Amino acid sequence: MTSEETLRIFHRTGALLEGHFVLRSGLHSRQYFQCALALQNMPDVEQLGGALADKVRSLGATTVISPAMGGLVIGQEVARQLRARFIFTEKEEGKLVLRRGFRIAPREKFLVVEDVVTKGGRVQETINIVRAHDGDVLGVAMIVDRSNGAVDLGAPMFSLLRLNVETFQPDHLPADLAALPPMKPGSK
Image (cartoon, rainbow, N blue to C red; front, side):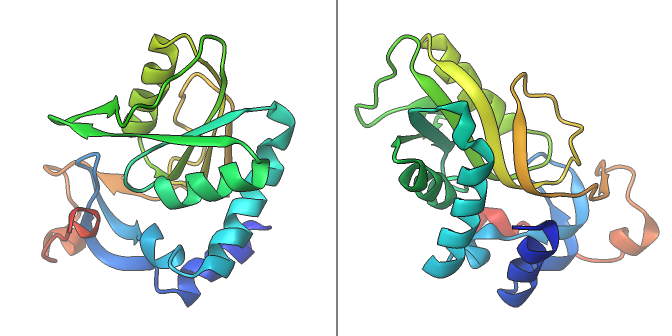
């Protein structure tokens, strides 16, 4: 699957939004990838998940882990296509944790899967959880890498779409962005 084909899915499903957005990282942007819209139709999930699975199959991961909420749908589909186990982290008192009886065995081989990465904070938290349990992180896969490869998560990174999407600190907004009311679509 090419970057153009991935972008077509986002355009067709209305998942690439334009306006003034506050990202989970606190940065502001003119574009927002609302992956939930792109992942609401199972044929698209299967296509995107299959393309990611093909990119990472040679790593030999036995378990896929995703940070909740955004990574759940694509993470589970990648795990299905790799015929791997799937688990996830979730928030508890503002931090990601492993819950629901999920266990990590020493030396267990992990692939971390997320929908969109800008600064990689939630992915890094998930990597830290795996490593704290003596698991091995073989790689990180995502649909959209908004950093265009600039984020260093200490593991090989794989994406379907790499973009350098402009982001701004809240106190350094360009005039056109400052004139628009900010939205937080991922937190609704």
